[in-house]
Length: 311
Image (cartoon, rainbow, N blue to C red; front, top):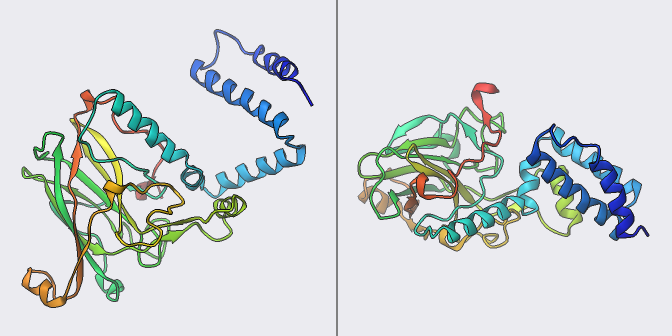
């Protein structure tokens, strides 16, 4: 087995080829640290040539199938980013903001914008047998004041666990909307209660989860961005109360404060409350955001995201 000194000798030979003046200092710093750690792991774990090339094939397949977002979620990398950002907020003395949690890989930019209220379904008749869901609340600052002009982007899967754009059988922006709130900060939307779903069967992410002795499923949830030019962007989601996987999410996204109570109502109650006469579920949830200038970052990671304009 190679000694640490021998590993370091190989590593130093590679790094010595770098020019101190050329290249990107941050890229060099990160790459070199990861490379050295990998060399140590290869020796400590006796990783073989065959295993390394299988890994290379796997990484290639993940890229070809555009599943890095799922791999980041399933391996806990995206969750760990949230943990690091939570710690930065704690050290900065930031309190009262809505808990962040992972974005996931299925956001699509450019959803239709409405004022204060939105119906997320493009064609409600397609989902007539599914449970209707109303969610409402306010967007406030950390002092409890409404944030006029804040934009709430919301997206979730259909009854088959599929997202529009990625599922071409759905119409554009189905179950995706952007709601701009008024002076009272209030929003409301109508949709369906989404189900949970799992990684595509046979996909590289699903195979990786199986090899790790884990499942690749998520509980029912709804995603949100909350943005305003003067405030830090919030990335979060809520879970649907009562889902059996709510605390066994393969993506580690569940947070206790992001599980609002959901009440169920009869068709008669719906009619009395001014809704269409059908049974429905209801949740109230308020979002709290903070001025960007008081936060360690602006909440945006500038990752590549899908857009119908680029489809």
